[in-house]
Image 1 (cartoon, rainbow, N blue to C red):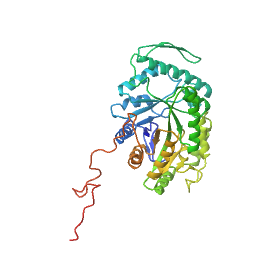
Image 2: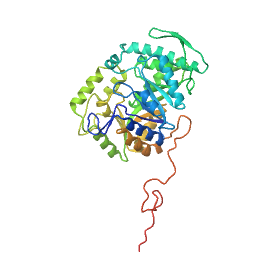
Image 3: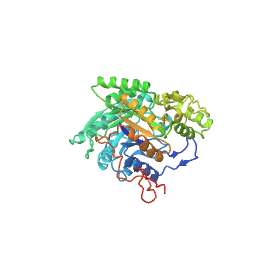
Image 4: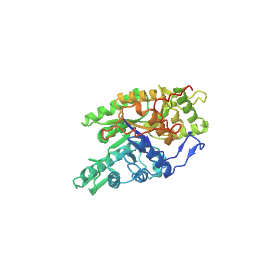
Length: 395
């Protein structure tokens, strides 16, 4: 299991849907989260994209020197830049980071936002564009190792003599991740992607999506890896975890929920529609589990106001670990997690759940979670926590 964390480049908070308890989106805070994830043994971090976020490529580049092993799963939107330019960007970031770049292809989203970025294609056309984009991007980087160039003429994109003079460290190119729930998305993943990601749906639904992508990939003679994007709310007891879930949405306003759901309904993303169908806007303030616990320990409350990944695993460490292992048993190896606030929850999850999981870095090594001690505050100037409790004399 390879576990990733998340850099909240759209801002962070203790509560959803309100400015109360909010944190500004600053470089110092992003750096804190990245360094924490690196030192705790996470495989990497997902850096999102969109007009609500700081630029993913600039931020990933800025964090190279602040981290040692951490990989950067950087979002890339076909159609906003030319594939040759982004291929060179990827090669540079991969080289400068020592092979720590992973690329997350994003084709869907909010049509209104995409129009603001100059992309006026509909859902089907964006996937046609993405197919051409990936063909060019992959070939440029694959051929860069041998100094070759590439010609391509498609419906949306054309290049002649496209070339990258400085190849990436990764061969043939930095691994490509991708998530999508439509038939077009599954077909694109089967043809050209390396790791298919799903949002946190119940295990049976995830199994169905994985089976479909596997079957499609087999027709092209390809084998993919699989992963899932989830939030986590873990506490030492199940009761405390559900109380934390209730606190996360304790300041939600019904008008904010309605406005968010209206906005999501206008998007043409099949995945976003599936997220909304899990909760249907239902919210019981007196019992946050009612109607929102859609599978054991899987809670859809985050999706009431958050676009994209809208579910969280809620429970004690053993419960959360078991749910993750259930997904792993379906064939998933990559787990991209997050929690509010992201700095504290990175520590909490690593400390409570990492010891219960069979973790492995991409290089085949287990993460270095245990460093030299002592751990914790020294008691009474000489007692090291974790040692046998001292015997106190009755006299």
